[in-house]
Image (cartoon, rainbow, N blue to C red):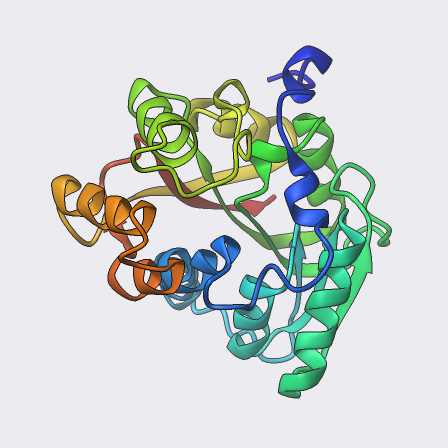
Length: 266
């Protein structure tokens, strides 16, 4: 893959992550669904990867690229890593730092982008990049930078959205555009910026990684039930918090929408 064309990148609204105030940790904020509905899947996958590799996080360093308000970063810290998060949205970085401080977690947060990481070569044992790759302007550069800051033998754990007919229907139409069900702000995602697994593999190979595994995800309920839940929220019968209590992702072989994976730096 090449750098995202300006005409495509201009369509995405990354300003949602720069909103003033805490838009991450309030149970009725849409971004809080990352904690209640997405984290059970992505954190569970990461822990299983670490166990399968006999990778003990104790004393190891980890970086989350695109750490937002710290919802995943705090889980990484709780795994035992000495943890750093970096994000281009200064307001999100401040929210993350404030929340970590309030909960007694020792996490370093920096303001910066994945295309230009302000860290020395081979600084980290593990890099996480989740729900981020489909938002960046220069994807090859992000992969190059992640490889640069990882130690040889270091672990790269990621997830992103697949560019398929089904992801367009679900992640764009149902989640963002069709008012009968939509719960996300318009243009939070742009379908042309989604990434196919084979494209991920090509980028990994070009940047000195050995790809190891991909896994899929699916709702914990049937699609008709999920649509019923989303409709309840639109009609005011449910809040975002209610949605988060009842809907979450579970691991699956289905990689049509959100999928995760890991690779090792050679």
